[in-house]
Amino acid sequence: MSEAQAQLGAARSAYESGRVAEARDALGRAEADLLAQLAGNRSPETERAILDIGVARQAVQRGDPQAVLRAIDDAMTSLPPPPQVPTVTYALLPGHWALEGWKYVWVPPETVPRRVEYRPFVLGHYLWRDGEWTWVPSHYASNGG
Image (cartoon, rainbow, N blue to C red):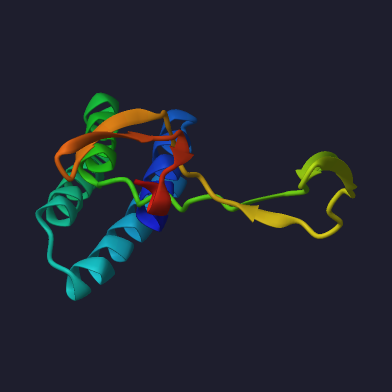
């Protein structure tokens, strides 16, 4: 959630709780944050959110609660959600038996976590290659694709 969206949420919560001055301050902080963003990157979504915040501030002055909440909601929905940061997962491989040549040997468990990457599993299938059908065994896709 961006700073402006957090401020808009705080403004909505404060106004619903009857803390009008706090809501007015949060709307001002959200507007200042969006104006700073607008200076660096002009986007219609940001301009729309700034206009909606202005409407909300005017509605606060008039004392129109429905218009305030509606304008805050409009401002929040006009802002695109920030991109999701992918989570990084680490895991330990447990001890297991592995086939080495003609016999099984015990592989001890790992003690240092390794990074887990998502790669989809591709089932085995036939593929037309060089004028004949070739069996491609099941495998994990490379580069996540």
